[in-house]
Length: 357
Length: 235
Image 1 (cartoon, one colour):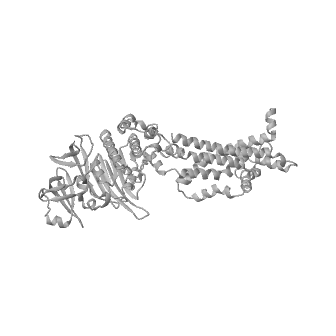
Image 2: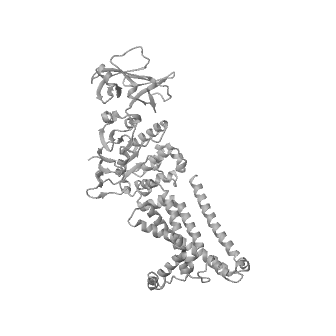
Image 3: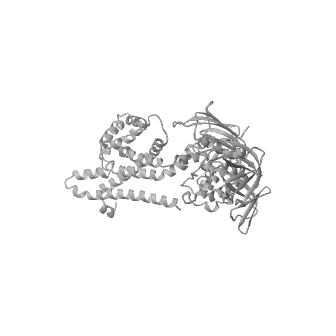
């Protein structure tokens, strides 16, 4: 029996068709796809806000929706917590009353999620007496997360939890999300159109496009399918490396992937802590041999895992201790005879690396 | 009544004032729950015959009050379809009593009340209600803990509008409640009665001033309530 099992079909008056089916077992799952691909609609079906023409939803073995037998459990009885993209805090209640809203209305309680602990983990103690209109975006997001947690849900749905925040805040909220997942172990399904967020937070990812599931699996495997690789713009493929043993000497920062050193842009993170860097597959140059006399500071040796040929580009995944994607032209791929198993060196300029906290 | 109060207003004027306030307060109070239910239903639900409800609610706004009063007289008269039932079962006679004045005021002011309340519910984000449901609150609990508190300004405004309109009600009242001093003669009726007396026009000013005062009072009260609400929320 899987944790969540959903299958639904719905046609909207505008002509958009949603036809998704997937199962979840993992702690944190990302629902990933371009905007307008039906991610939020899928959340609405799970939460009970939208009854599809045909479908079933089962959570921990309980049927929440089955159009064939006419079962449609009301949203308030589904035990599904929702964190909305624009938070939707109750403007007439202060933060504490917002947090206690779920506690007040939930009939039966199973886990004991304690207000004091939520306030501590999310660091919102100083906000309790304030009203939502006087909170910043990041504060609202934390309160919304706390409010959903305190309603004691069996599943947490988050609609683009980081989309409305700027980069610095994103990193902080991401850290809070990770803490929440570690502390209460409530399974979560979150919607995102950022590959970095998927890699950072999710154990499992369901990739949707135009109302259909095009891939599902661990982030490594699911994101290496042709569909997500072919996406352009902000949500196209990105690389995310987790660096260990970060050190900063005389303004030069560096960290390690396995035994290889990665030079970083100047930073002031505490030394020794892990850090994440993000860079685009187009920022990497591939070389069959390690060449000297180049300005690119990072020479990372690895083996080709996979070569995915798309229309106008070839994506090469290279295992340098962690998997990274490199985008090359079809001509280059042929000329260099890039094949799985081949040894290559990945050249990356320091300033192509974007640090994430 | 002591000397001072008598110096301010005549007994007839006191009785008109007292009656006006009682009738308007009762009318707005009794209509309020219905106004809230109808206002909310018109915003949130789509049901068969919605247009009919909408038309019925707005009708007294465009109908001459005298016509509304006549229809009420027919319905609630001793031989009318509702009046006869009330008299038979409850021994209650409505027409030409102060209850009829309340009834007339209620019907005539109801469209204004519903309009204000409906606007208020329209400005409540339905997704806030969804959020409440996902937190475990049922439909009724959601209504009382989210929708109604968020719409309360409009509800208060609706009450005030209905109250003020009730104070000024004349046409329907005189049809269904008559013009009986001490029972149904509210300020507008007293004013009308006074002007029909010889030399009465010169004596009207006190009642006119009273009407202006009451109207201003209602306006100031609603403004004050609004400000208090705003201050609390931005704390």
